[in-house]
Image 1 (tube, rainbow, N blue to C red):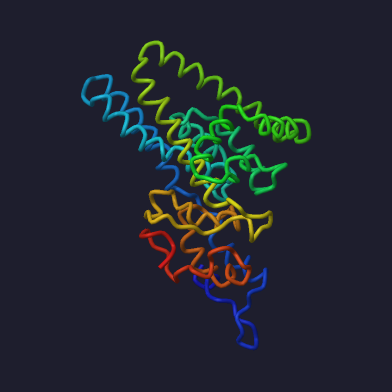
Image 2 (cartoon, rainbow, N blue to C red; image 1 turned 90 degrees about the vertical axis):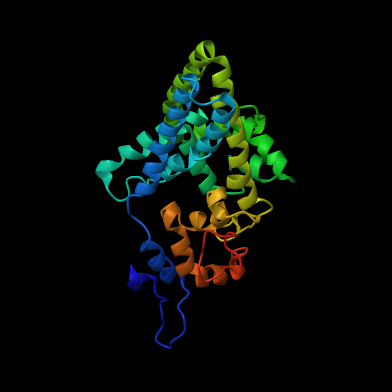
Length: 307
């Protein structure tokens, strides 16, 4: 890895910023099992269950459980996202089951299906910022962050007719997409019935530990995953995602301020993106990626990426 992450130099001692050189550096960060996401995925779900247990046993007041459940649920999507891209199994084909297994367990607090989110997310990567084909377009390309926070619910709950038309088209044209949606629909139905049973026996607890937290977190994810990285940007590999800042340490935004790295090379694990950016910074500047010229040489957890 040390050799590959060094600047590639041509015979005339000029830095080689070719696509081949860029890919050589990027490949050095690919292929490992992202064990951190496995820990986060299973860990946050167990914490969520623990919150339910403590509230039902009277150990924890409901208002405190609501706050802790919301914080815990905020970490529910990232492990599924890693699984969607195969990061949880890395290059080990015999461990591919981990991607869907951990991904689905992690999503229970969000009441979402791993397979459905995978199907739509792959289309997002293939057609980022395309108004006709990007499932996230209606969340990302709005005038204000609060519109993104509201629009994401139309997408996740199936209330946006534009999104529904796009899904119907993909279902007709792409059999793999349809297979993922069909498989995911089974899990989604199971989670729905689980919520109904929970609401019947524990109505207040279900409202404050599950329903409201998942709604709040979905809005939060719509803003930081879709709107901020992609708003007002065109279609194009090096043009469709930007670096951004909001004065909050990037940890609290799941490092979506450096989401550019993920769209450049989705096979690089989330927790390896800072080092990959440091190595690929010259290439990012050369490609004209929005915000790349302002990147520091070292990416820290402080106020995001900028000095």
